[in-house]
Amino acid sequence: MRISFKIMAALVVAFCLGQVQAQAQEEFQGLYQKLQVMAEGGDAEAQYHVGMFLNNGIGTERNFKQAFAWFETSAQAGNALAAYKVGCYLDGQWGPIVTLDKDKALAFKLEAAQRGYALAQQDVGIMYMQRQMPDEARRWWLAAGQQGLANPLYNLSVSYLQGQGEAIDRVRGYAFFKLSKLLSEKRINGQAQASLDTIRQSMSDDQVQLAEKMVEDWRVERTPLTLEASQGLQRARALVSGR
Image 1 (cartoon, helix red, strand yellow):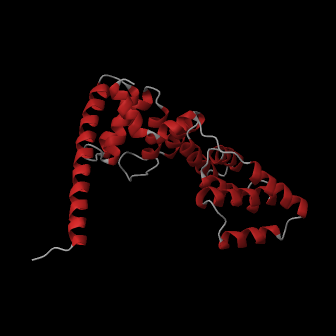
Image 2 (cartoon, rainbow, N blue to C red):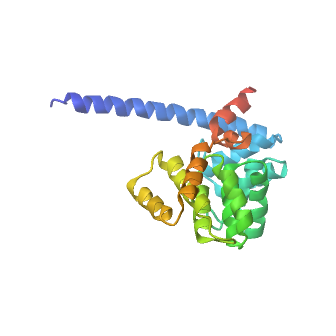
Image 3 (cartoon, rainbow, N blue to C red):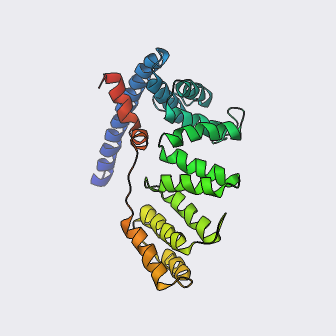
């Protein structure tokens, strides 16, 4: 029986991909074991990474309860990213793994938000809005949006267009809506443009000009903690190698 070139090529690709995956899994297992030794020795960053490996099933079996225990230990040692993960568990992100506590969840996430973590800032904004505290919510959504997160900017837009906690502000509502689309999709699609046109109808020319200037002047700047969170595996490798 003849095997076509396409089938043969597909088999070769599948074999090579399998080898790459096996090598990656072997590396992750070794990395996890080294991190675990460091974590047990009291290294707070290693404890956070061990929690992430257990949380995501990298190099080991996924185990949420063990992950939470390591996050909690790391957070107690001052690791802000671990504090955020503790807050996520207490907020029920992965179900009832631990006893849910919204107040403690906010406290842990707020710690990470104050240290500059964008996702924590986004979540804290949502939690404050749920508590009917729009001024605090907008403050944290703005901080997260300044780091390039689109959803907080959309939330800000809705808040200002609906006048949550203060008078309607169409300038900021328009600007933040447009920014959220540019950050999430890199463009303004037809549906988004129709929404902007609808908002524009209730704005003066000066207001539109001011809103467009806000969009033009917007600059994204991520904090060191947000950048650190985005470099998880890279930082874990560097940690075990002593770099």
